[in-house]
Image (cartoon, rainbow, N blue to C red; front, side, top):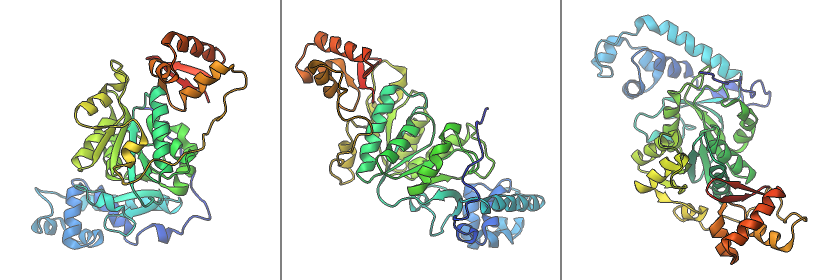
Length: 385
């Protein structure tokens, strides 16, 4: 596939923490042990549990591992250890020249929420610091509609303004909208990558790296040089759910990675929220199925904040103009103001303004011609800010 990866711009900063603060003393064994063929997460955790550290486990032979009940079958790693250790040292050299940190399972900086997962990641590469406090994942389709993007911006921004940490996957579409809305609201966000620390994906989000890491964090369990291959994203989705107290899906097709994130959340005993979508449109089939399966319907940030023991989101300053354009006549101004900051259906707007649908539609056409209102599918109208 076309990875569209580019080198991470955050390297070589003299103000970055010293490598000794970012890399555990026995880091090469944390990495090398997982590089051995046949040593997956489960085997790794058994080895660390039996010998108390990867370094101590590394010092034992394959036969000793089998006798201790840490491995099954005829696992043979002796011929692979030199190669694995060399690879690990190469990774640490790249890590030392970057601003990223290595956080290992059981360490003080390892995210506590991930420690409770079944077979948690042995280590994580992290840029920044995961903020304290309640968190929620906001996820959805890469092929997002304007309505899905608007809803995501509104909900993520309101939740962030109320102090909720927003977790998402840094992908195009809904994920990017969630990260950007959080930052614009002055909130904190965590991005979970499906690629290595030195591969920003998608390319156009390179400008977000610094902004996310400044008050939040970027997290990946994939080593340096890992391209964003398709098989990486289900693994990433598990971490998105793991780092969150719940998952909000704002738009999803029938086969969307966002639905897998929601499934991980359910398996982890967490709440799943969903924004209802337009009936009959394939872009919303997945999210509507979630609701039919029992996901909690969300139409306002307050629906989630109540579950977190918080009140309504504080009023946020709009990022676009707060006053109607001066070219509008009184009726146009009334309809423009009636739209508010979120997408609205023609019939709902007409009822709220006590107008007939025909009268309201005629004014909206005039507003579209003036370039201050945009119509999307399903007779949904949005201000152009």
